[in-house]
Image (cartoon, rainbow, N blue to C red; front, side, top):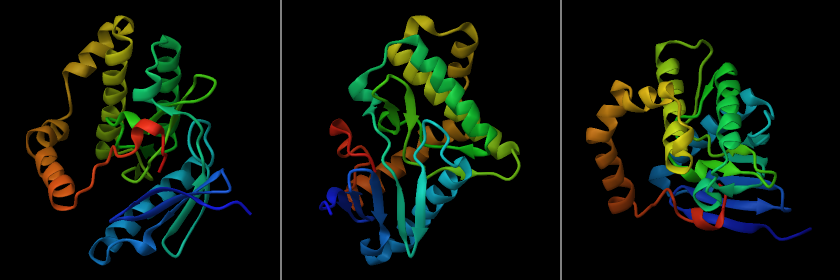
Length: 213
């Protein structure tokens, strides 16, 4: 049996690659005061992946038990490395988002380029569902978060393929949701202070060499 490869180890636990194709997120070794949060985030991810049930472009859940999440490795390079400039990539990414939302899942963390992958055949894929919302009904909150998923995709399209933005897409970019404006005005600063200054944690750590947690 091949030795597990360490992908990440921090206050929230350890992430390893098992046998080259299973990502294992172990929250049992998280710092004592953060173990509850680490487990809660892993549970959210497991619930989202179970709802998606192997939707192409998302990781397949292997299992979640005793604070250990196992899922299939999703091959690909993070967006900021692959730098997709083909309009077809963004068309397929929009289709992937629509399928995600129809399944009742809002990713809720798509502003981060490392959460978007470009697969070996040039297609979009998503990882890191720790903040995802799984909704039995697509109510007001879900619709707001789904719209923000879309707006963040369009922000990436503006970065890599700006000439292919439609007039409607530009209007969506110009009108962030109220909760997004509040987050940018105050919440993001608090989040950055707590995670980086107090906990010494950077959520983009390792993104450059595609260590997919």
